[in-house]
Image 1 (tube, rainbow, N blue to C red):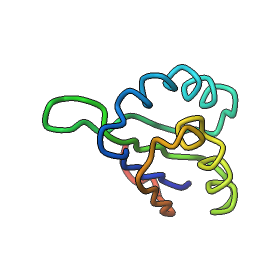
Image 2 (image 1 turned 60 degrees about the horizontal axis):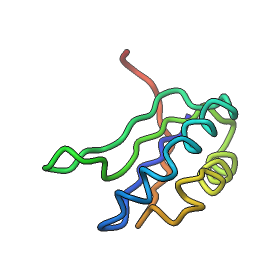
Image 3 (image 1 turned 45 degrees about the vertical axis):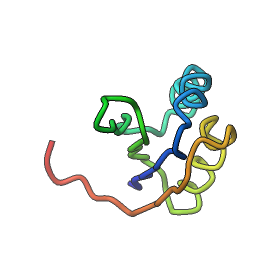
Image 4 (image 1 turned 180 degrees about the horizontal axis):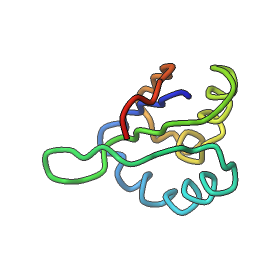
Length: 89
């Protein structure tokens, strides 16, 4: 599995909201998301994403990340991709 750790660009909440339905549809359509959810800032607004992907390799994770509607809309300031191992839960 791979974790996508995404940080939104400052002031990009409107971009996130405008593309949320497409992002959620992409998650449903691709069928490789193990867990996902937004990071919240001090005000409680969405400010980034954590997405755990069940894919074969880093290239597949990179491809998924690049085709996410949020990424295509220019929402993210940075995206980290890390190999991840489930231990608890």
